Image 1 (cartoon, rainbow, N blue to C red):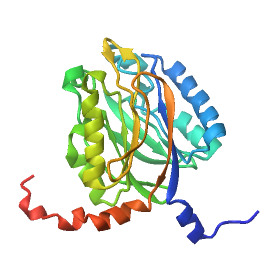
Image 2 (image 1 turned 45 degrees about the horizontal axis):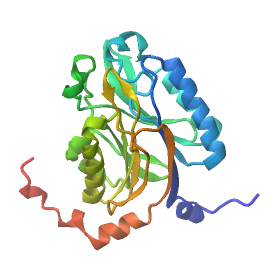
Image 3 (image 1 turned 90 degrees about the horizontal axis):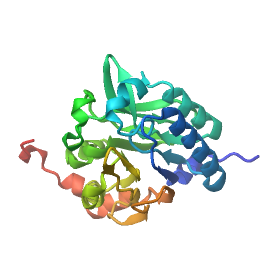
Image 4 (image 1 turned 120 degrees about the vertical axis):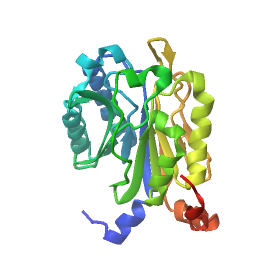
Length: 278
């Protein structure tokens, strides 16, 4: 078996193949949701052989907020071990969406990211809680800033749902050299036009790929918008899901266009930070 040289590997990694799990979450049923994720991963690996898979926000319990005290993970378990095993078994990177996660006596909306070896490379607690859905009454906001992480030697970032409305987070990630921003969500249909517009804006203004995973269906009277997307740095939608159906969104992204676009439209070198008051 011929092995690729380091140079060839780096060239190959300019193209990353994604699979996004757009699904309907069963409220307060983590065992059922884990089984559904496991079945999907097995199928998608056999069919599409993705480099990276993306799960949606709060996929272990959904927004069954009044039931989180009993349904949420405890210190990221059992979800952490579950996703580690999947990553190692299938040699895939996992953007683990987010989960309801009890730690230190509080419940957080926590994201976990694993590399192909099953190593936890990043974890993040959602900073901005959604007042429209009373999220702040049941969850605690994250206390650590967003950071860049790497998968397959590519710098990336992640934010959760309502975080999308705060462009400061995406810009922080871009300034650290990220070429891909992941957005995991349970974004409501009532604001689906914002979902699309804000994602395109984040891609254009930061000149990176945006890969998002949203849900469909409903929970406690809130209907979710679907339309998980892959958007390139020009703001072009490369792939998108429907607004109603559970489905898999796949796309191969060419990372070589990121530095080209940043050279053609030199946003970052044109910045004048000393003139910004925030």
